[in-house]
Length: 141
Image 1: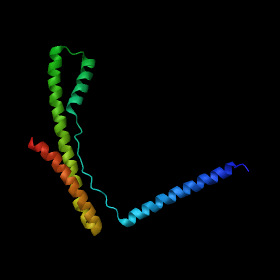
Image 2 (image 1 turned 120 degrees about the vertical axis):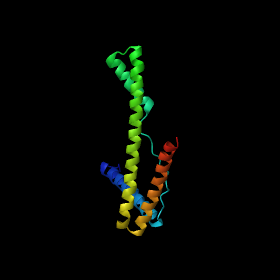
Image 3 (image 1 turned 90 degrees about the vertical axis):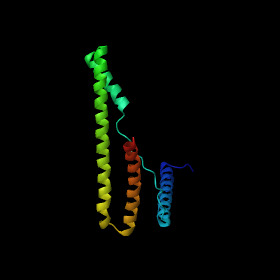
């Protein structure tokens, strides 16, 4: 007897049910064991690449304005000054952003259960370490 399309669909459906049941059991076993999430070190990257921005800006300005060599030198100086200002503004904004997140963590604590408080405190410590690494290295320079 030759299998029909219905037979193939039944087999496919049975395999899908087995697959999803296995995933569900694996999920439940993981939850019961109370697997701990490994603390991943955070990194806070700078959002402004001075050299790339300066190069793109100069390229665009040279095409747009057809700068001669003396203009190019003076314009490049202005672009570098602006790039440094943008970088500093971004650093300041990023520091404010992370201070606001730390403040949020502090304000949430009274509203959480003890186990939730421990989790948010671990998260806050991880974030604080990342902030310290990111901004202290900049301040030391």
